[in-house]
Image (cartoon, rainbow, N blue to C red):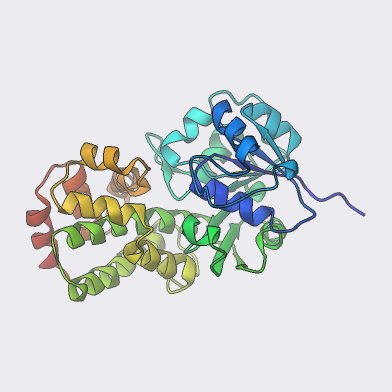
Length: 332
């Protein structure tokens, strides 16, 4: 019998913890787990749960090989699932010396590499020479907090190589996670960034006390804006109404677990960007994604009034009340 590939989870946050929980749902499996801080690993081993994130989830630590040495984890593993916030990815990879060329690299990161303005899969391909066939993306409406509670979750695995994508889909499927496979890698990645931007917009409007009527119009316009961008950046047959696109947008725009909506709400209530970030103590990926997509779109010139409004508020320091009033006049 062929030996099952060894999975490694790369990151110590809430989404990394949720993915580790999914991977260990099959009782005959063990995993490797890279965390940057040794003290987090020691506490995890001592108490049987992540001391910093999703601490209600108990793990059988005998089935987990922990290490803060990224090279050790890479060498021991066949499949690497990266679930670190996009602003910290380069920092995590600084110490990487082991080759990724023969590894299946899976991005569970819903962001873009800042400064590079590259999707995660594109970054691994260009900088670390990972073959395109070995690059996969996990997407779909999937708050870590609900995964922690075994709530039914649907994930979409995007891959250029369908066999690799199907393998990953099978490994992630369990009694509360259903999976499907598509070849729209870039579409999934860009959609996962844009939905965060639009969730910030929804939060800003909520903070400004715009009602549900306007929020519905805003989200309706957002999915159209996303579709326009995706069709220009990567022209491919896709159904924008599928859960990995529209579904992920909806859950991020409306859920109480949405960091980006929470961040936007604080901005709408008058918090500065820095104050909102400090009070949240968690990363709102959409803050960084807004700037990245805005800069990328300079080359494409897609009509994106919602993206532009969020950028003007976060980076141009335009009053949220003024900017959203201007935006509302463009909504239909």
